[in-house]
Length: 273
Image 1 (cartoon, rainbow, N blue to C red):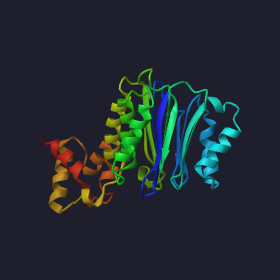
Image 2: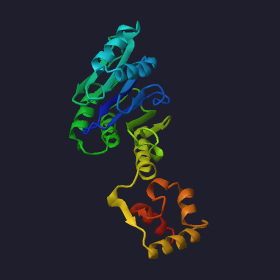
Image 3: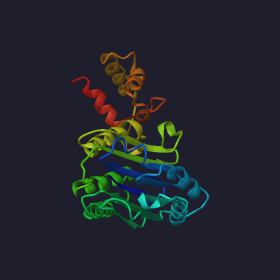
Image 4: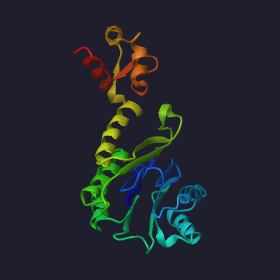
């Protein structure tokens, strides 16, 4: 009922899962990940206990294949399970129980595992693998995962249709304000085109929930500071700092006001038009 990819970034700093299904809120039961530990997708007749167990095994130093073996050895329902795991070093492992509904199968490679069941055919995982391998290794992991997911969907995806999709990526200090490891955590729980909607949400997440790079930072001169104050007040805000907080651009403007992201500068200038 589901197709997914678990992977580690080429630089070894991020781990993540992308998943889609003709199933309500697939982002709830399937993905789990912890920075510096690894990631897992549990699906088919999903055993959600696998998530905590697998991450605990990985955290104790088990490789993906060892963690997977421990999971299925201890589970009498293993024949109905499908699971993909990536460990801290990018080793991948995947299991498809023989009782999973056709088409069901997987492919693994350096830094990724792709798996699916009740699919339109083997071409779904093949297309996902091709898209993953074709994507730039230095691209953000979330975008590489989503490209693979979209390719699987275009190749037929879940044979029953579309309903939900999710994307989870972790990296040390990548969360809101740098206070946790959640770089991306997006879910489309019930939508006729869930991957299209997930793509839209990822673009918004990039703007609102990721920090500006040095190339995106525009120094705030006294002249620009005066312009920003004028624009913010014209937009109905008390001052520019209030506008930033109201519009949720805290990660795109320096707390001390010394720089502003070029995208946010363009947005506030557009309010004058």
